[in-house]
Length: 244
Image 1 (cartoon, rainbow, N blue to C red):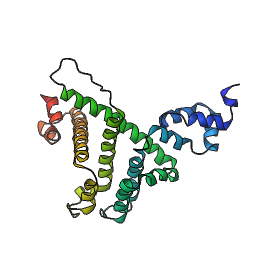
Image 2: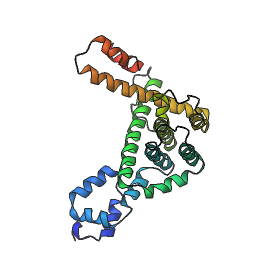
Image 3: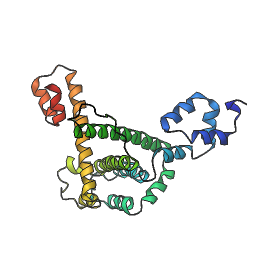
Image 4: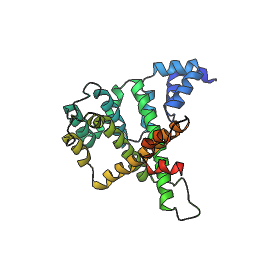
């Protein structure tokens, strides 16, 4: 029996066990029978997401998607009811957010998968960099520490919270007509204990340093004056060290 003669239900079950959407895309392009099975059996992409994203992080992944969608309709309403409802649901009834994934389009689910993969990679880089700084006085340092399940969850959650914050409140900094003492903004952080807000601050600094490095490298490829580099170099001590 060849793979192309397998029942669609069995093919769908195999596809549902894939690690991410990238693997799914490669499989769909490899065989017409696989593509037809995917179209006939619903829920394959949902099964992949539930396997890729842990139940504890799934509400955060959905929240970021929803925030990006309604923010387009209310770009200036930072204190809108939609923002408050989303934050309240995330912290008070997270399971409700997880269930909303089924009503999303395939495009949004694919976006969730790509974002989660990026956050996992950022988490590994953040952990390695933090571990290296803690043990900078030692000759031999493990560059990729083995994180526990709880540690990995805490780091990923901090990155998701930071992404959600930027998605919800970025206009608050772009448009100074919005009050900086925004109650929804304050409430967002008041939901977390202080040490979890410290985690968000730490990953924010890490993110800023990475993006600053990227800006510096992009500028460095073109002939510019020293004055053109100064605004970029001021963003992060990590970036400044590259030119020393």
